[in-house]
Image (tube, rainbow, N blue to C red; front, side):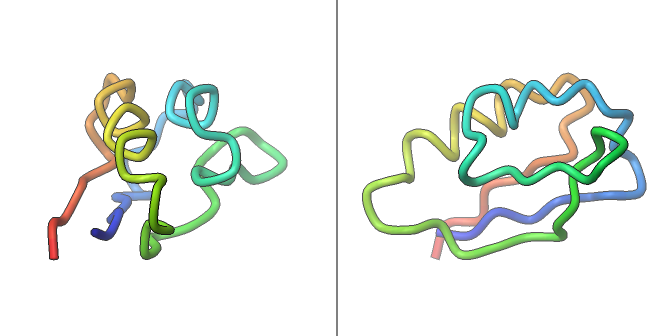
Length: 64
């Protein structure tokens, strides 16, 4: 599973990071700092919850 992030449309709500701070990294201004990553084994449910928490839907889950 992968997470893909549309950084250009992030408005800085930080809800995904509030759910999964170890997965969704923020920059100094509170915006998502990464464009995507492979979800570590065992963290899939947490990654899905973080994606659902984003009101702008900039965090997408891509199933392998």
